Image (cartoon, rainbow, N blue to C red; front, side, top):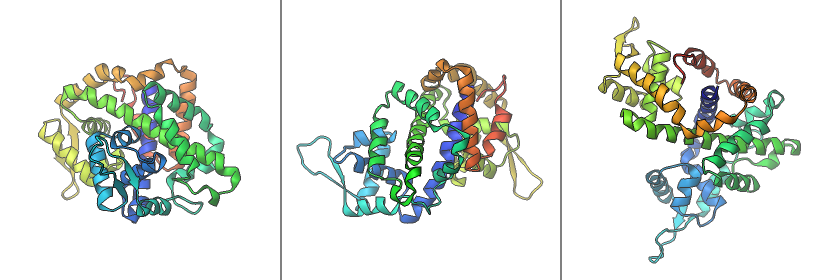
Length: 326
């Protein structure tokens, strides 16, 4: 039950994140760069260490993001030589970048599609469970961040919506941010466990998808994993070089269909039997009554349907069985 909860959560997050990235990139920034601008706005004078914690990023990732923002003149950094950790501030261009990316009543922001689905679910139940896992996983700071971005209207221009929708909109912003922290924390927990198997988290995801959809192509993998084609190709190349997948020619010219090897099957079984129950964030769900978890999963199904994320149902039907829990 908890694995289904995670998969539904992950697919919901990835679908929103992917569509959101497409919207943001039209204005010359990536979504991670814009997210860093939100964090700096919410916590003026923040340092890279705090950005790393709030953004759920590694320090090298933050360093790369800050470098890009500096190059685009969207942020400035204290140059005081006696400071070990330099404060980061938004420039006027940085404030403007946030302003033009605020979503309004006329925006095509995927999260806004969920406004029309409120009769299907109670947002508070999902928010509470994600809050619970965030606090227990030492991600308490996210609650302060959510409060600040809502007060400052950093993501959504609330005054373009009817006042009657403001509470639901703020709940959706809270849900999205808590969902992101939950998914990335589970991913990080699992990634650490996969080191002993000499696999990255994307590689294990790809193996399980290929195992569930035997004969899948690289293009289909990118769609199911919600990756770019180039990212999918890189993962496939690495798995092929490790002898974990093999390819057969299809009937259509130049088409290649992928299958996992026996070696890969053994690794998948090992991961399911040994690692799944060691993922700390998921283990927090063990104390959630089964009936409540079933209701939460149903709510997540409705949310995925609301943003046309129908592939998750097919993936669950193929992968969630007693012999192969994902």
